[in-house]
Length: 272
Image (cartoon, rainbow, N blue to C red; front, top):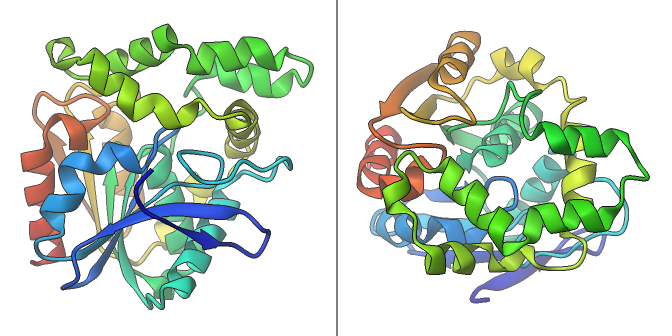
């Protein structure tokens, strides 16, 4: 890995990378089973005008795997607050993808004074149908972890889920898919996933999004099969201060598929 670590109150180590040294802070939060590596096409570009941090949520990327099943949106929001404290960041612009979008919203409802603006890329908020197999696994505690682990981290499965997430399959690059998925092959990733999905499916976040005061931009891939545009529209309606934009031709990983458009939208929205 390249980057550094912050030690959290519970002993976990949170991996991050930082680029740029001017302008407001931006914190990038990855999606399920992803990592800081996903932001390769965004971090350096945004760093021309901002100080841009990419974090690995605990349980993912190069951060610690915990033995206790405390992974939840609340836990992630609290670890981000600790991360900001460690770097003396009073307020930041939070950019979250998919699960990271849910974490960003959780953070904005719990620690509103720490959040300047929110950018939610294909945010996974109304997701009871998200990864149904994992929901099922989370309810069956004796489900063989080896089976779930293979399903999540085998190369074929990683490639399938990545290809499925793209709006245009022609963009699929096997070597890149393998590089961006490498951090998932760490013992404990499966347990993190299962615990998270169990807690996530019980979250009342959808009922709280109307509390978020931070100006919010929702970016949805036109062809997203995981978080369809209607989910984005529903979220925008439920929030006080949200605008929605559709990213043409992109699927669930809009920021990687259309980085030029997404980076421009982020920069314009943040007022740089």
